[in-house]
Image 1: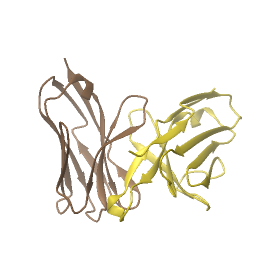
Image 2 (image 1 turned 90 degrees about the vertical axis):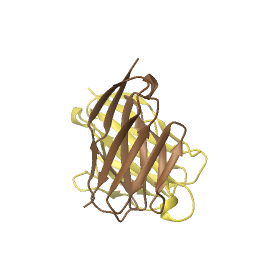
Image 3 (image 1 turned 120 degrees about the horizontal axis):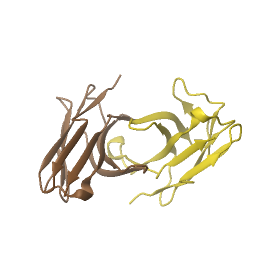
Length: 109
Length: 119
């Protein structure tokens, strides 16, 4: 059974810091890995999708890496802003998504 | 990009009544949609997988007679919470698989969620 773990569970940083969110999964037989953002009381917004054959994806200040063999992914956020405050979820796909518990990020002005 | 529209965004209903939640893929066809439930400060729990034109597949522990799912077209899936009770109060989110090509290309697009409160 696939298990996804995210570390840390919560993170509070001052504005402007670069930060890294970690995601690990137990079964490397995945189709892809997706990072989402969830604001309180809202649905999920897709940030980045990394196919199993890819090593990383970039979108603006976000960069996600994938090391399938070791079962790890990281989400790098550069020059964090208060608007980045949200819960970040990683999910691995093998026909259906398995989610981690999320990292709650607070960026303080 | 792919957009999934979910309605209503919130609903309050009396105990014993039924509530229907709609999930529509606006600019793509979704043969498969997924329904999740989320408790406060927890991650998403998959309830069922909805396949167009066939019966939904429910996860273990989810009552299929309480949570009726209908996926009558390639763009619409509905979740009906029947005979709702206060313990059914939760945040319900739908998603659809989008993209073309092999499974590696499929991403998941989520609706905005429905906050159900049963009083």
